[in-house]
Length: 623
Image 1 (tube, rainbow, N blue to C red):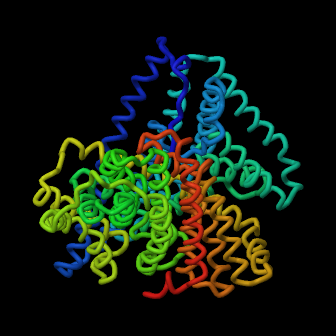
Image 2: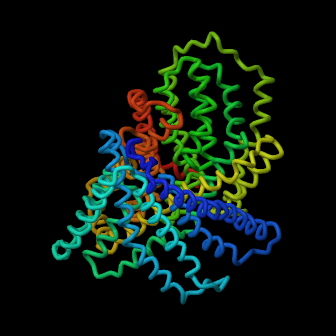
Image 3: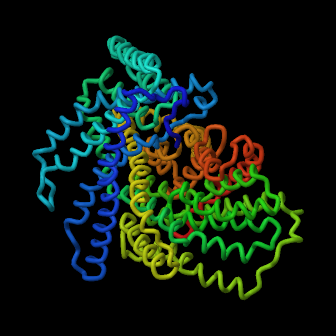
C-alpha cells in the first residue's frame, strides 16, 4: 500500500489550499470517530452473541443481523478514511521510478480517475438505496435502506476527499491537465459505444485486460481500477442497469465472514501493544540465540506464531522486526539479507490460520473456513524448512564468540512469560474446531483474551493508543473490503459475459489433466499476486478456478493452499510485489539492498511450494 503524494513544490500554500485542508481535516474527524466506534461495536456485538449462545444457551437472533448492518457502514467509512490517508492499495512499481514532476502528475491522475468512478457510481448508489427501502430486515424489521445508505455516504465522502485533495495542489495547470485527460478518456469511451457493441466478447479484453492493466500500472488504486472497468463494461456494452454493479459490490462486501478481517487486524495491533509478541520473540531468542543463524531461525518461528494470531502480514512484520533486527545487526547481519528474510517469511506464513487470505478465500469460494484453518498449518512448516536450509547455508560460519548462551533458568523464565501469548493461537483454533465460535466470531475471543492478558499479565495496555488503533483498523479494513466489493462486481461481469464458461473449457482442455492445471495455476497466481496484491486476485479468480480444480480431481483445500502460497510468493517478490516494499518500509531498509539476497529465499519458497503441490497429504492429511 502506498500513499498518493506530490512533491513539496506541488503542495499548495495559498488561500485555496489552506481552505481545502481545514474541511478535509474536519471531515476526517467526523468520519474517524464513528469508524473507530463501529469496530468497537462489532467486537461487542459478536462477543455478546458468543457469550449468550455458549454460556447462557440463549442465542441472540438479532446479533448477526445487527453486525451485518454495522459492517457495511464500517467498510464504507473505513474506505473513506483510507482515501483521506492514501491507504488504498496501488501498484506503484513503475510510477515510483519516474521523475518527481511526472510521478506527481500520475498521482493526480490516480485521484481524478478515482473521482470519475465515484461521480459516475454515486447516483446509482442512491438509486440502489431507494430501491432497498421496501425491503425489511428479518429480525430487526427495519428498512434495508438504513444499511445500504452506507454506500452513498462512503462514495460521497471519498468524492469530497478527492476534490479537496485536488484543491490543495499548488500547480493548478497540472490539476486541470489531469482532469481534462480523465474526462477525455471517459468521453472517448462513450463516443466509441457503437464500436464496443459490435465487438462482442472482445470487449472483455478491452475493459478487463487492457483497461485494468493501464489503470493499475498508472497507479490508480486497484479498487477504483476494477470499478471503472466494470462500470464501463456494463454501461457501454450491455443493456444491464448500472445499479446492478452497486448491488454486486454490496454483495461482495457484506459477506459476514469478512467481518473477521477488521477484527483480526485489530487483534494484530493489540498483541503488539500489549507486549505479547515481544514475549514470544524473547523466549525463542533465549532458546536459539546461541546457534549460528539462531536469530534468523527465531524470526522464522516468531512470524509463524504471530501470524497465527494477527492474521495481518503488516502487523506480523511490524511486531517482530523492531524486536529482532537491532540485535541481528549487532551480530553482523546485513540489512539487505534481513529485509529479504522478513519478506520471505511473510510469504511463507500466508496459510497460517487465522490468515485474512484464508478467510477471504473461504468467503468467496464456499470452502470450509475450519478446514482451511486446519489445512494451513503444515504447508507453512514445509516452506519454513526450505527457508531454514538457506539460513543454515548463509550463516554456517557466523562468529558467535561474543554471544552468551542463556541458561536454563533464563529460558524457563522467558517461557513462563511467553506462555499466555503462545497459548492464544491454540485458543483461537480450538474455539473454531470445538464449535464455541464461528470463524467470524472467534476473533472477538482472541481480542478479549488479549485485553485481559495485557491488563492482568503483561501490565502493558496504553489506553491512549486504543482510539488510533480502532481508526487504523477501520482504514486498513476499508481499503481491503472495497477491493473485494469491486472485484466481486468485476467477477460478476466476467461471469455474465460467458468468460467463466470459456475459461473452464480451456482449463479442462489442458493436456496432462490435474498436473497441468496445477502448474498453470501456480504460475498464474504468482503473477497475479504480484500485480494485483493477492486478495484481489483471489476474489476475482477464486470463484472461477475452484470449480474447475474440483472437476479435475484436486481437493479444494489442497488447491487453496497452493493458490495462497503462489500468491504469497508473488506478493513478496520484487520488483512488483507490494509485500516486499512493506517489509522494506517496516525495517527502514532501501529496497535495492534486499533484491539480491531475496533470490535464494524465493527459490527456497518455490521449492517448498512444489512439494506442497505434489503431496496433497500436507494440506489435507488432518482434515
